[in-house]
Length: 166
Image 1 (cartoon, helix red, strand yellow):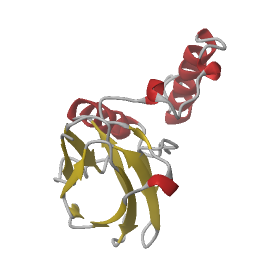
Image 2: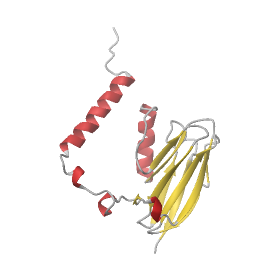
Image 3: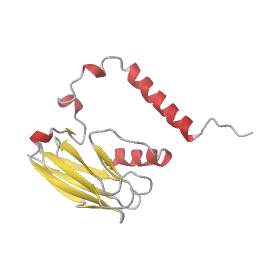
C-alpha cells in the first residue's frame, strides 16, 4: 500500500506550518518593525513608494522566455516603477533578487509550481495581464531578475539591473 504522506497537498500544508512556526518563533519582534525604514533593506534594495518613483520602466515578458528589456540601468538611491506586461500565452513572473536567491527560489518552484507570491519584489501575471513592482535601489552593484515559473529560468528568462553608484 502506497503512503499518501508526501502528496503535493500535504507538502504545501507542511511548508505552511513550517513557515508559520518560524513566524510564531519570532514573536512580536517582527510586528514591531516599520518596513519602510532601512531595516527592510536587503542586498538588492527595498520596496519603494510609487509616489517617489523617479521614472517608470516597462518590462515585457514573452513565451520566447525573454524579458524586454533584459538589461536596465538605474542610479543608486533611485526608486523605479516597473510596469510588467505578460505578452505571452503562459503565466510568467518577474522576481528581483540576488543570483543565489533566484536560483534557490527557482528550485523551490519546481517542487511547488502552483506557489503564489505576495512579495513587493515579485509580480506573477496570467497571459495578457500587467502588474507592477516599485523598488528603491539602495546599493550599487547588480540586481538580477528572472521568471521563476518551472523551466523558464533555465530557458534563459532573466535579466540584470545595473545600479550605478551615486
